[in-house]
Image 1 (cartoon, helix red, strand yellow):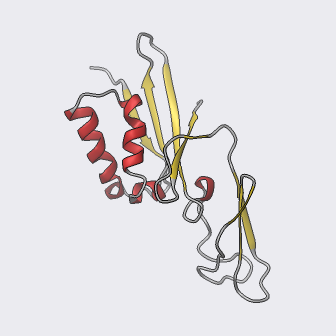
Image 2 (image 1 turned 90 degrees about the vertical axis):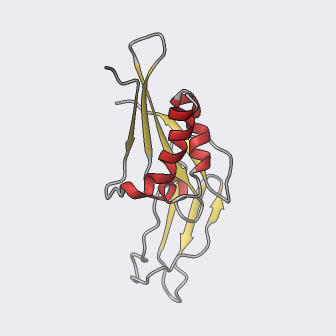
Length: 153
């Protein structure tokens, strides 16, 4: 028996129930239709872009390169300007005034998303730069999409 593919989820507080939409598409594409997992990831991730798994965890795929004994791995990160700017989570409260749900709409400058606290007299803010080495991987689905990066370990 051998493993050709390994999927890992990176969420610290992982909730397996949130991966159900991912595994429904996985089952259909891989187990029922018999497609290769590495080449099917784009379809599976696009289908799950509106599900909770996209906002909950990153996905790591490790697979054996066909015709060799080497292992390739790819990290997939969901990005949405409001929910996960460049794959980061917005703090649930402003770190300066501790007001919950205080962030303004995002302001994009180049490849940086910036947010400001919308409460009067508070100067709280945060910004997120596009991480190095990632490329946008899937098409935009209601503002969100997956990025990917070759992962070295």
